[in-house]
Length: 146
Ligand code: HEC
Image 1 (cartoon, rainbow, N blue to C red):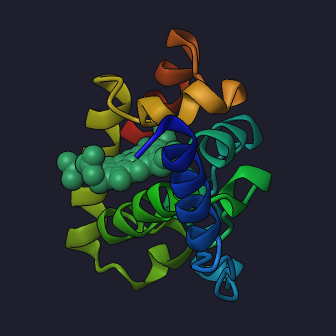
Image 2 (image 1 turned 180 degrees about the vertical axis):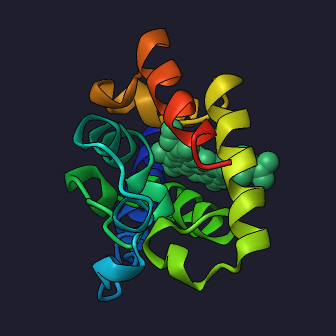
């Protein structure tokens, strides 16, 4: 196989991948069950959660153009599905009191520990790279909910 055939082969694989798009429909959102609504988040704090967390942890995911390009799209979809499993802000109202308390604890932990938002996310979304001060703003508010 020469170099040219390898390149053609790769191009064909990439093209075939495009026939397997991800599902980009968001389920309908009931704002009454939304975390920021239910917990009465101040506007600034709500904005931080929306830009840094809501793409993966809510049903208000925004899908920019590159989410249409496989295999990047599959990688992103994997994070969204996995993120939903761990924490879903849009259906916060469905968690019971014990679950809420546990999630609040985890949110403080990952924001304090700079584990979230995920590195690969803010490398692309510069607006989601939250400052030290903004992290404190988020966790200070979350602690009032404990
Ligand atoms: C790019 C998608 C993405 C973004 C953006 C994101 N997360 Fe996550 N989150 C995930 C994934 C995937 C997991 C599960 C795997 C893991 O823990 O790494 C997760 C797990 C979590 C967990 C559970 C941790 C645990 O120990 O089980 C919490 C809490 C969390 N995220 C909070 C947040 C908060 C708060 C933000 C915003 C500051 C945020 N996430 C932004 C994808 C994301």
